[in-house]
Length: 239
Image 1 (cartoon, rainbow, N blue to C red):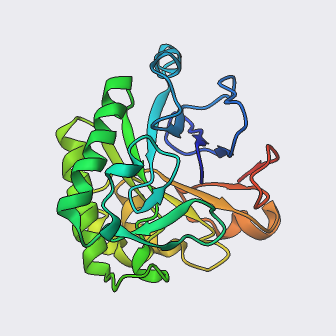
Image 2 (image 1 turned 180 degrees about the vertical axis):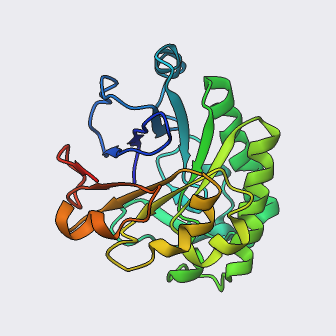
Image 3 (image 1 turned 90 degrees about the vertical axis):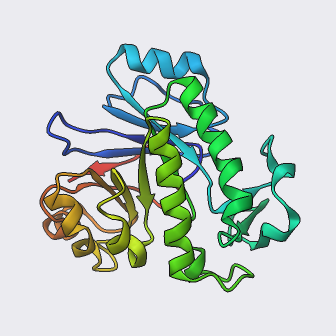
């Protein structure tokens, strides 16, 4: 989920997904067609080097959560800061209903992404409606916020995806350019991506349990799936 998410694709947009998380040094030798990297921690030099290898680079931004270490953290109004995210120290949910306050900050992050040469944006934590966020966020609020992010990304020539948030996928699948999912096989939810797969849009899936025998036969045709430990170590198995 954090910092360095490396997605590898076959030429036909069907392949594995590789995730490198935390404070590990980015290994740009990974054979991948797409990398998903942090908006702040990734340099223009890294993006340029990946482009020279014909690799597309996605820009990770935590659009639905506050991170206390970010250089623009103080720009987020106190009224938008909610309860802590479970298991993620230093992070809090954002009140996505306050689009007028949040969207300009996220747009500035997209400007950084664009300036560094990124090709797309991956906004995280868009499912505050399903969490104990500290705010009465509704699915319609998340849809409205995501639509604003989509417009801002496309205005900058950046593609944009949706991570998890299956409840709002029906309203957004025609507008987003790709999707990232965690454990749709385990929760028997992969059919939710049928419209995206039918439209030939990339869907990247990570499963944290099971084996190729128990997982891969349940993966819809066209979905890119890997099986990795929950701690997201280098170990991985692709379907």
